[in-house]
Image (tube, rainbow, N blue to C red; front, side, top):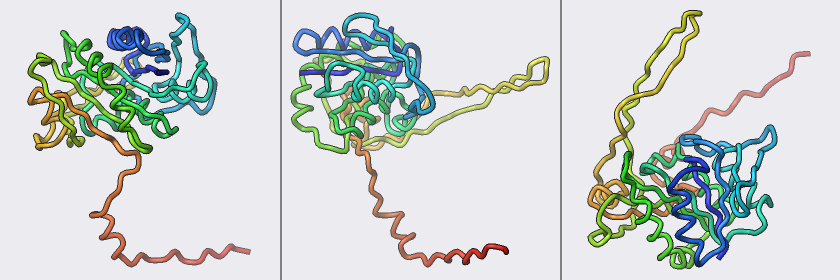
Length: 255
């Protein structure tokens, strides 16, 4: 199987290379990852200028663009094959629920799915060492054929692996939780009166809803969430359908 690996933690991330080593024995693996940290870059892509690729080894390229760039340019021809599957990770820290809006890890998988390719975003949930990279990598390796057989267009998988003994760990198919962000602004004024702002605050929380990704990892299980590219809304949109909108006035040009 041809596999493209990327991430948002950067080309030197241990999780990326542990996953590559775990898969290389049975598959053809190509790494195209950002040349530095790109966490929180969401689905940004480079439209206005070139993206530089630097060859690190025969099967490893660093990219000065975003995680989505890594996938976009690779699939369009920057690497010598079309992947059977794209895997983004292994991310250091969780990507749960509404985190996937901001996550570069999730964006790389989403970009692959938008282009019609099977894709997985995989993260480990601890914020500090030890990270269960080997557990996550072996889970992907042992189930990659199953994931590919289940894949259909218009979705990717978001997988989160907790730091739990694999012997007692289960697997749950989940939906994204509603994360609660506790952001706080810190202001700094330089001597020249320029102002600098920093985001800080406590870690995100979530509603402990049964069936959610947060509920699964809190209870020591791997969360597997199918994430669809085209969200459908059959509740709030009904109120809009019943509304009679005011039509715009005809625009008359002045002579």
